[in-house]
Length: 409
Image (cartoon, rainbow, N blue to C red; front, side, top):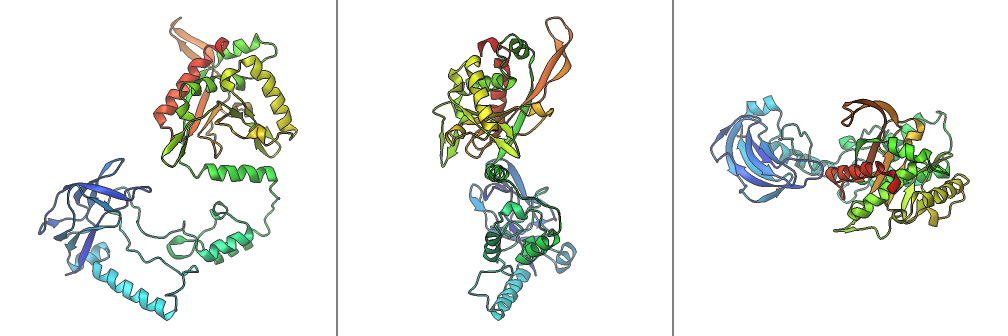
């Protein structure tokens, strides 16, 4: 009688194993298709392993309290031939026959010694999805895999992985082959194009490296009236960005770990509160860094900021002017944007963004009525390995609180 494995399923992109917490079946039990038979626990959740088809439990290779890798055979089911045909599941016998045929074909092609081109497929057992709502196969090389031959061709052309994201792959598992790449390049050959400037290439490289981390963004509204009233009484008038910069520095000084960065198993805390300010220039953005912002008042920051921005727009910044920052502030509200998800630099954990202010009716507890007020969205994007959503929310709340006392900034 055909046999079908009960496999430890892929439980999420970053999860490689799970611990069995409960076994609900025994040898000889009859189970239905899609029946939850084993409960497993990962670092994030408890989930159920389900069967792929109806059958009789012939073997159990699992114990409660033990941890098993994704793809491990936890048990075997004996199934009827018509059940296999009806559900389309792959039996152990069919999988073994396929491996024998594949090995014979590769021997004929003399590929047993070479792992070199787009015809190569890693021979791993396919794990059929057996957790509801998580149809993710494990152990299968897909479109993310780039063969050595493909990498060599990309190197010749000066291309990175992100550059081929638009190419549809026709290779095994959906991978992009050299032929796919060449066809795509021929297809766009006659399209209008322009040479990317060194500034644009630098920004692209920084964003590509930034996005290699798990980034998340949270936001909340903030009242700006008090900061705007305070600004009108100053001479010279500090920009709203400086109020944000100063509040950000003070909040981080109270909780330096929020701006730390992860190196191996250590979180390295900042030794100084040097914060960058995103400045829009022709065909890109530069981020000059203001030093020791936590120890400077608004008046001191105003002069230093104006001089730095002037040099940035004249392309007169030195390398020292743009390195060593622990975080960045960006005021994308100057472009009329009411929301956004800024991306931190690769060497920074945080970036704080301010959207455009809007006049809104806000309920006042003091007068028990709606009053006109200027409100804007305040957003922080963070490296989720270092900061969680709750911590980011508390940081935003503290910044918003500090902005309500601009005279102390």
